Image (tube, rainbow, N blue to C red; front, side, top):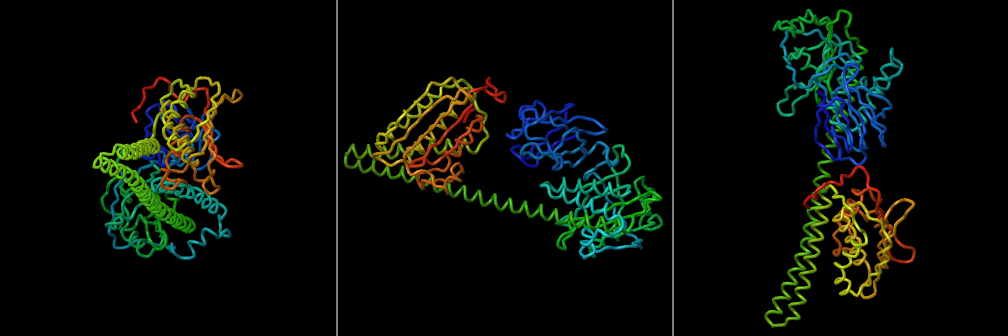
Length: 555
């Protein structure tokens, strides 16, 4: 049964099993639902076919990609393929089925490795993976069959250029090697970082396994030589070698009539990550020195790719820790400012109580009340920005929402002597999220009030209906200093505020998130003479991606 694992995207880490045939993938699909905004409602279909599984695009808006290539028709999949839908990257697992293109069965980790201790080993050719010969193998186009080999390396480099996990990478490498070698079996061994033991990661077999747990016998002398000398080795006529005489089991190399072995290091910067070990049991399938050089080059490039994955993961961890530290520092700083405001208010109240001065008490209480409002607004925006929310869609009167917001901030405007002018047009009912829209309008109006100068500032709030586009447009304009060109690039960025200690850096970021959830748009602009304008555009027509029969979610 195939499985799809999300490597990157909003649903990162989730796995989906193809229980249904076919399996529809999409933002509103009943089989496999993704929360990626770049994914169409019915984006792609996974179905059996050709002895395996196929994927086809369902006329999606952004297309479906397999291993970095957009597909125009049904594309066959094999274990380790990557599927990109919108911004989501999925890894295709299908360990039980046959690979129709390479004719080999795929196994990951569920394989036994037996290291034999021979008195001798028939190593006839070696190529050092760290020498110029291995690197020249990629660049040299004058050798016999160089056109084919060069095509392989180019194809291989294209696969490695895509962002993927080590598991996906090693599966693709195994498929490519099996396609190029007439090998009976291939195993990718990882060098354990703690004990230094060889651990099986990926295995490929040319024959069907009938659900049996396979055992591969590997020469300890060959693996030791590869690990110590960094050599890729070619071993021929190994059927007569003592190292292959032993268990007598159905999986033993001696019973398979082994004729040829290639073992190369997966290496980068003199560090061996693992080994590629392939063997052939066909009488006319002995590996050539040309094939050895090619597989050495593949092992070398694979090692560099693994090294890059490690570096990328290390960088991401470092960036995540740095971002976490910055966020914690910002939250602590802002919460400290709020608490200091409350503390100052409480000191005013204590002084007023000691002096029996009711006016002093009122002044202290006003300070506390304002900081309570700021704390509530800050917590609401933080919650909105940090969690995934499902809009609660119902019929909304936008003008009533605007009037309610203006009523809430009326006292603040009176205290600062700031004028609010309204021009509310005739609007049709809007299918929207009342709480979310209320939060957006409150954020942008409050932002405008804080931007203007006390005693003479003017904030204008207007609404209108655009019949041509069937959009409701809400504009909030202030006569403040406007938004500088430098600040404009960060105006909707979380934890970035151009108002110093007065701003939370979350209001506009949370507003943008809510508006995008409602399929709308929000933009900011600086006016030619002075001031700034924020414009919210919301479609009146309810899209099919929303479910109107919902119950509101808490928070």
